[in-house]
Amino acid sequence: MISGLDTVWVLLAAMLVFFMQPGFALVEAGFTRSKNTANILMKNFVDFMLGSVLFWFIGFGLMHGTGNGFIGEIHLFDWSFIGDSNIPAECTLFFQTVFCATAATIVSGGMAERTKFSMYIIISVVISVLIYPIEGHWTWGGGWLSEMGFHDFAGSTVVHLCGGVIALAGAMILGPRIGKYTKSGHSVAIPGHNLSFGALGVFILWMGWFGFNPGSQLAAEGTENAIAISHVICTTNMAAATGGIAAMFLTWAIYGKPSLSLVCNGILAGLVGITAGCDLVSIGGAAIIGLVCGLAMVGSVALIDKVLHIDDPVGAVSVHGLCGFLGTVLTGLFATEDGLFYGGGFHMLGVQTLGAVVTMAWAFCLGYAILKLLDKTFGIRVEPRIEEEGLDVYEHGETAYNN
Image (cartoon, rainbow, N blue to C red; front, side):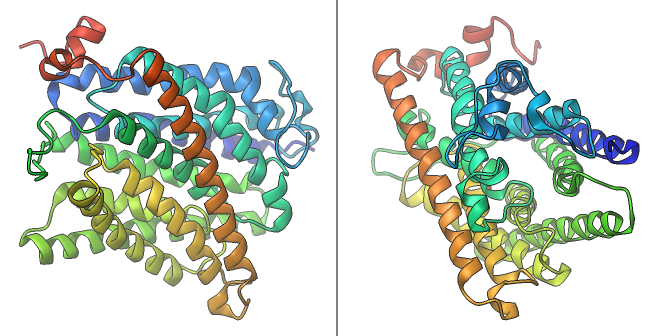
């Protein structure tokens, strides 16, 4: 029987998740240079526009259709197969669509400032119709990982780890931006043009996560659901806070001053990390997960940039890839039921680790193969002159700032 309260709650949560799109747009635009702002904003629109159509066209069926343990079924333009539920099938379709678009949006940050817009459209399509729906089926569509007991409540692995490792593949194939590294290999900072945009984007994402995580309860009616939603909101908020605090004090200790940009990413790191187990861990456990993710993110950003020489303009790989992985695995430690630290043994920890590893391998390998093929056939990077003068004019014929 369809519940009006459940339906309104899930739709409201989906709207909050949709509102994360402008949050991502502001973060990515603010953390990159002004000459590429229109390009960044356009890609965020493309992710949601194409994701909405393509996930409705085929992705939803591949993800949620019965099928088998590996893949669902092809239901072209059909979502009614989802069956009886407490919410309408259309409600489920929209809620799952905004999650799909989020996975695609993560990739744009890691490939920012040097990717051909036409090639980005192709990779966004591939994510929406192939990479995300298939690995999503393993966990949320009744696939083989869900049968093993793998737990990812709102998408640390399904959404964030998937997007983060595709961003890593793209950054590796593209190579660094012009001027990012000296001939001796020294990293040169390329500051974003507007930290106010970036900070506002993080606040918007923080708010949007209050739909992303508790909305995944998919119900609000009754005492049990009310308690569950309230708990998830508290664990989500706590991890965000401790992730930001960890980044603030660590950067203060290392660099002599607390870094706003890394605090912003620390908050996001905590949010990404808690997303898998926000329903199972205590508020104290969420605080520890956020702390670990915030610290790990700072170290990862330095490692990827200064040691591996992979140019990730917004830190997408560290925030979404690494912290998505960490949050999923840490759920196996801190889950109050079956977690290792609560007497549950190693089973849940093993399943969580396996689920994160295989999803990471699937998304990275397929993303790398497709991007490499596109690079060899069409070239995915813009010409040096376009990169130096900015993608806005050459790719879109207009600029964000007409002074």
